Image 1 (cartoon, helix red, strand yellow):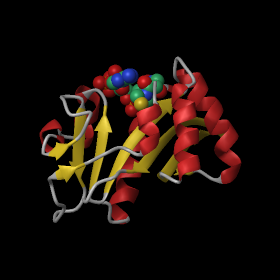
Image 2 (cartoon, rainbow, N blue to C red; image 1 turned 135 degrees about the vertical axis):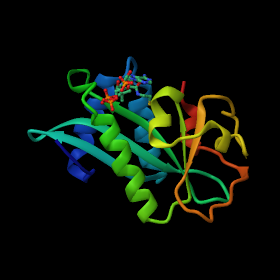
Image 3 (cartoon, protein in one colour; image 1 turned 120 degrees about the horizontal axis):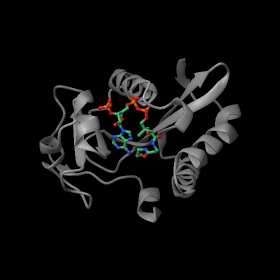
Image 4 (cartoon, rainbow, N blue to C red; image 1 turned 45 degrees about the vertical axis):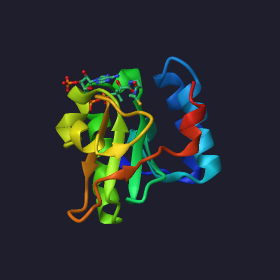
Length: 160
Ligand SMILES: CC(C)(COP(=O)(O)OP(=O)(O)OC[C@H]1O[C@@H](n2cnc3c(N)ncnc32)[C@H](O)[C@@H]1OP(=O)(O)O)[C@@H](O)C(=O)NCCC(=O)NCCS
């Protein structure tokens, strides 16, 4: 299995994976909107035998701290529980760190995301409409400012 940066020719297949992996088309529509708005900083695909089986997006957040929001992340049901999502997330975090991004936020299940170092306490230092136990943050740069507003890209506000 290969994890690589999405290219233009992947976009239709990525949409199919998003639609298949989630119960509704809301996340596929969210990814479309993030693309249209230019909010996507990093989009990675997991490829097995030439087929895209997973996808993750990191989008620019509105914050004085250089922050990214992780998600949506999805893997085809046929390829789950094999670490595909973890590989997508780890590669995305490594690339984000290399590119100088300071903090990555994620909204999800703490049991899953704590394994990557995501911390609800760090996220609580920021002001967010999603504040709560499911909002977590991971600091990538030692000198990152750890307070202030942190707002997901505008497309998230339209998510059902
Ligand atoms: C969540 C998802 C991306 C995990 O993909 P995966 O490749 O199976 O993940 P990994 O193999 O890296 O890790 C599997 C772990 O994820 C956990 N997991 C699966 N679905 C989960 C969910 N919705 N929330 C939290 N954890 C979940 C499993 O319990 C397993 O935990 P374990 O390692 O403690 O056993 C995949 O199940 C999926 O696409 N689900 C539908 C879309 C979705 O809900 N995405 C997340 C919200 S954006």
